[in-house]
Length: 282
Image (cartoon, rainbow, N blue to C red; front, side, top):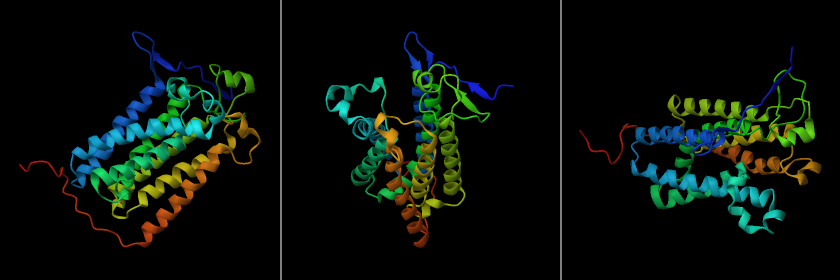
């Protein structure tokens, strides 16, 4: 009986008339479901429907730009500083989740300033519920690409990645930790927890609680999984804590601070009209 799984799945769903990859599909599904989750929250609390269109634009642009620049500056600045036009070549790969997180934070601050004119925590608490789901689906996309896997393992759920040049170079014939799945399952569980907190426990009445839970859950798990994940770039090989872990620490600290702050302050009492603010009364 084999004690490993041979993951020989094509990253492409179709190649004609256009190429469609699993990674892109997971990203698109995440955005579509996430948009509807947040829209339902906005409607429940009587926010204007037009806010959703603006939020989609802000977040979509911030995610791609932030994730790309995060990879450029955090992981491969030596290369991109010499080849600046390559920064635009996103189709060649290279996105960093920490950069995406920073981009979204900046976008929400601007969105709150120019669109909602509410505290950014109001948007963060609702948006990050959906982002937890998107994060899980993106990790499934990483699995379909046979990328971002972990160290060698003898556990029965170890994966071999014959479509990965990195796997052939480092672990030929040896199974590895499917760290994509470890992170994906964690993010899906976090999504379920935050949905329960919002819909069953009215966690939105404690500003910052959902956002803090997201930061602590996502980046705390990321910090731990990094111990068994292969370095993304060569300079990480001799680091006690790699770049992903170092970048995760501030987010975890911020998450804990937000949770403590939210639980210590009086609970708000929100109204739930369950209709858009700009919806005509029937």
